[in-house]
Image 1 (tube, protein in one colour):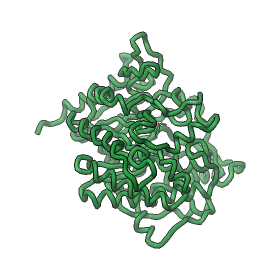
Image 2: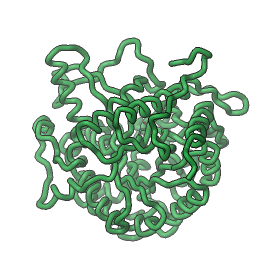
Image 3: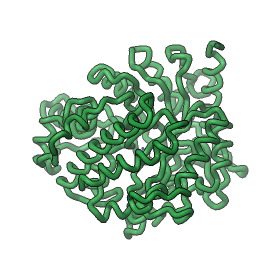
Image 4: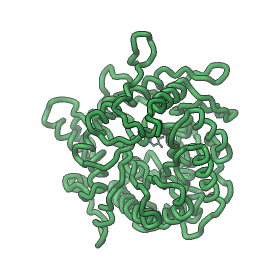
Length: 460
Ligand code: IFM
């Protein structure tokens, strides 16, 4: 862990950041809400996936999670304790449209209406994600993201939410990390819906981005001043050696992980070299290109680790594999800790895509927390992780990246998808027996950082 000379984690130099830089924390509905049957919520593909034997570590599920649907007032207190400017949360589609549409469940929408009102009353700006992986099961039964219909239903659902919240919410994320839905959910089968098929994965990526374009148009039709973006999880890719084979492998990995998503949402269409690698015809229809090219107001960047890759002809289609970096620090999930990668990714997007605004919409780490008798966690590793990544953002801004804000993942420990509850990403600990929340050392350090930056804001 990088330490200053007095043994405390290095304090980032925030001077390059603009005075109105936004500090936030992020969560998603399925990971925190629980209340699986409350107020007319319908089942989602993640409820179904949790029932697949061995799909989730420890047989965990999202039925209760951190019970945030009921404990929202406690979560709001946490947000206030951290002193953040903004809260990124997601709306659960199966609460709003349990049947996938067109029926609207008023009670489901009411929940988010209250949440937005409470946030604004507390001076916290909402950043609302419309889709963070909890597709209504009924839509999966009709083909899910592999079917074009889901893109159309997503736009309808977006319109419903925008009509209800759009008078108060002005910043929206359409999709969170479509890569995970496509590649992990439809190619590797390690996430819902648990499919392992390249054609399905390519079609799921196409229809997600089509849905993103249609949803963006629906949001702007409701509020021409709305700021709309998509969140991509990006990684800088480096070849494992100086060999030509590894260099080409890194290019393929960059195509698969980064360009496949970045190119279309910046109006360039799907990259031809990557389409050729997959060998799957895209399910395009007339008029789609214009929808896919709907301009972004901002790009949300989620960053967790870089990828170092080597050529490997034994790996079907992509012919590369990720290799561990010897001696590099890792999180409890084995992800390399590499703050410089965040600066690299932000600068690369700035240089290659000239996106008008960038937001770091997630960044965080799971470490093996040890609480004291009071539930407090002195999480020095996570504290250093957060501070070092904020420093990387500040460095990128100093070099010209138009980053407007940073959201730590996550407000509190929560359900980490197929890993269940063992990885803990929170700035606040959750005791899952009692649901008691306790801000960790990292949360205190983040609160200090936010307060320090705010103290230096010029008063207007
Ligand atoms: O928990 C997830 C989140 O849902 C999406 N981005 C990555 C996080 C950590 O894996």
